[in-house]
Image (cartoon, rainbow, N blue to C red; front, side):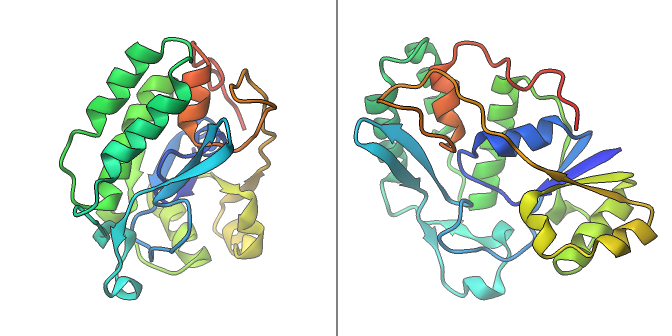
Length: 227
């Protein structure tokens, strides 16, 4: 069984979904510390003036002592309307815009107080839209503890993974020898970003998933993936 693991992310980039599509199971790593200025609560979309950030405001009181699952969205800010308006303004000429935008706007209606829950519901939406059927498990729902490499290995052991498909940055902290000793093979996901039809000038890679989804009528990129 091939397992991949990643923290929650808002409007994740294509590489995030490619790794999920190449896995037999994916762990949504929401039981680790929240990182400020990361992709957990923000991502970029393409505009006529270049990439721009869409950021979910969060309450950071005592966040060093909280996991991602505990982080609350700042409901006092009118960010949902602003994000949807920005998406509408910059993708209104995309194929199937009206039909897609209505589906997207609907998932912003839910009153979800915690960031992790909000991003999880969005992840399920994107997996359906991209036709990725990989089962998802929330780390916060599992009786698994540890830090960094130890946590990842413990998750692999608990879920019976034979192969761990790591992001390329895993080389910086994974103790590969310990994985090998435990009978878990580590493979590193070296994602080569494809080009696709994109509005607003020359192609810019690594945008949030909404850019690919809006610009391409059929979600064929993730079908029949293998490591």
